[in-house]
Image (cartoon, rainbow, N blue to C red; front, side, top):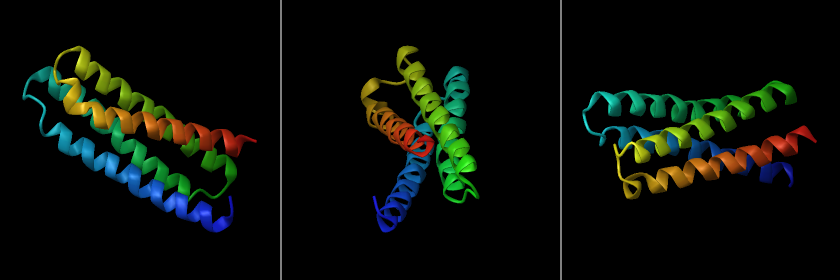
Length: 122
């Protein structure tokens, strides 16, 4: 992958992770107003917003080690986001159909960030 391809990918992935955050905010607004929905929903908001913020920070990393560290955080937070989505489904706070697209996106972001982290580690 050439330098231009890397830059293009990074910009596309920055937009994608930001959209992930915005989509999770919009989803949060649809949750029932129960205490457990608020608690789990806030956890999802924290982890999903961390995905976008940390990928953006990774793109501004001053070293390969810093990039790897921020990318590792993206992996952890994407996985945590998927976890909270699964909890929302299994606790019957939301229907799987209402969150399946977001859950799929969390898993795709997780796979992409994991693969990128492995590439950087080589």
